[in-house]
Length: 431
Image (cartoon, rainbow, N blue to C red; front, side, top):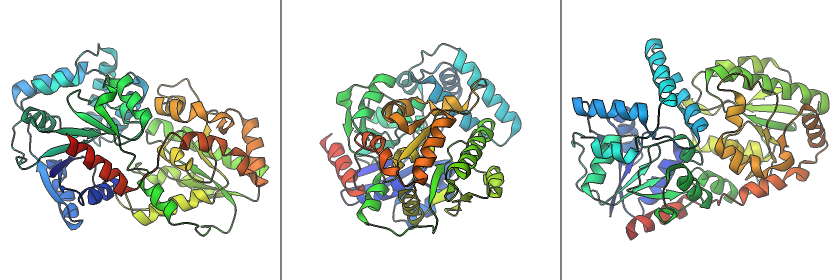
């Protein structure tokens, strides 16, 4: 069997490359990437042993332009509007040209106010892609969310070949809107089956649980056994997670407050801060380097957003040996709950008047469902609670705060890349 894997972010998704390597042990795999990224990704994929093809599905005719404009304005959004809006604001912030950025923001704001009746399946049926992508030899397609080419998905669905979509991250069902009812889905866990039904009306019988590729490195880390401490001093960790320019200052204020209270409650410990990998300009963290008890864990980004597998393992080593991991609601906060360091969600100390706010970020749907709702006293709601917690951690009492880790970990099975690839292959072969 030959499987066509369609993704728009191959360069820094190490787990996706590991997954495809393992999947290649069961079937021939071809990576389909957007044509605009072919020049960069094609050679790298070839070096890694993958066949790569550019997606050539131009949809710039008059009819297609009208259909895309209508969908852009009236697209059906997930029930979790807050998640969707934050994600789209992040995309807008990445646009370099100021006039284009302002136009994109205006379109987004207009979209949020208009009725949302245009379903994705209707949009796909109305599109007329060019059909230039060579894919006749592919037996089955696997799209990685978020769908990177509407035109190519429309072509594949019209061709009638088996098509699956992998719900790549625990928050994708809440922040993306490109979900078709005409394909089967592969998901992380049982909770994701509920998420797809509640957010997009996808029936549970359309979804198979195979595990999380993002947690594949956690399985590998666990298999390596005990590790050496990365620092000679005791410390807690904070994982930065915000890339919206208007909210970064709020996150930095919270980090500074943790550092101040740590110095007062447990002066023998330091605060190790991990920058957000996807944020392009790490200059915003410069002020943290001046704090005497802050250490920046920032040696892991080598090229663009890429992180090496070795640095991913080092990330888990750093968290494992910490007295605790603090965050505002991140995938890394979820991952930390699978280690021996207690994971803490900060839920106070930020302004809620502006829109969007850090409060909106902390209370994204996946955080409320999978972390906030089961973390009990590991959700920090006041300065007094944080002072008590830091004092306890300084006294070596992190074992007292691991109940939340166990509650979160019970909902996220950790499997090897090979196990996930085999489960995906068997599901696609069955169809």
